[in-house]
Length: 102
Image (cartoon, rainbow, N blue to C red; front, side, top):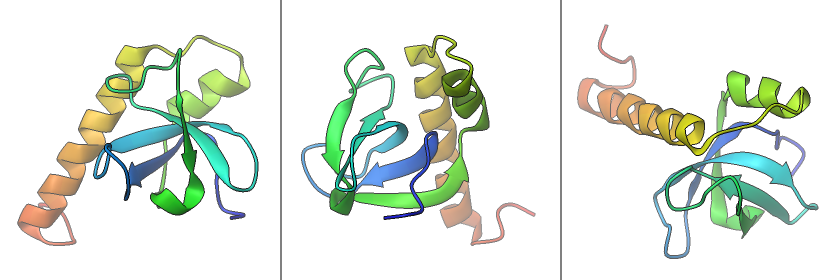
């Protein structure tokens, strides 16, 4: 897949973590990426996951991308907060329709 980027929001479509949201924190090769959410999978031990088992969203975690590029420390709290905000955003979209709560 050509459209994979560090900091991209994904969710798992297979495995015991099915339905959970993660952030791409590393790209291994054309078949695997490293994902973490700060809760189930910590940044210290990201999950190596097959790309075909993930759904990629068009949103990037800009602050995480900047930290990766500048070699700053990414905390589990950063990832956990981001993933929980994304879940809340998706729930609001489902509750109020695709336009959000406008």
